[in-house]
Length: 79
Ligand SMILES: [Zn+2]
Image 1 (cartoon, rainbow, N blue to C red):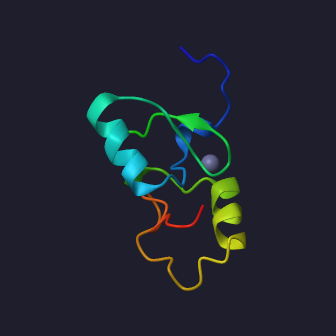
Image 2 (cartoon, protein in one colour):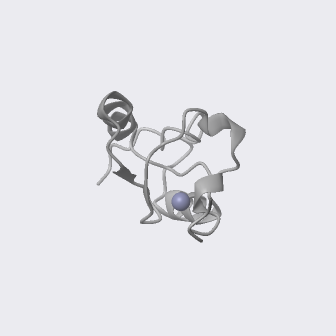
């Protein structure tokens, strides 16, 4: 079953929302903030937020723009 990819698959990672949209359409993997290349799950809300993504996201100084960021990576406007 598992290829030993660790816990990554069990977390919801922060990814830019438009990337998620694109991925949902054609199934291509996206790169999360933590560097994980990942195909967003059907149901990210079931999973806890990836601690690494969360840390990076917060350190980016998203400045009070946290709501709803869990599965969409917030606004993701900053590169
Ligand atoms: Zn992550």
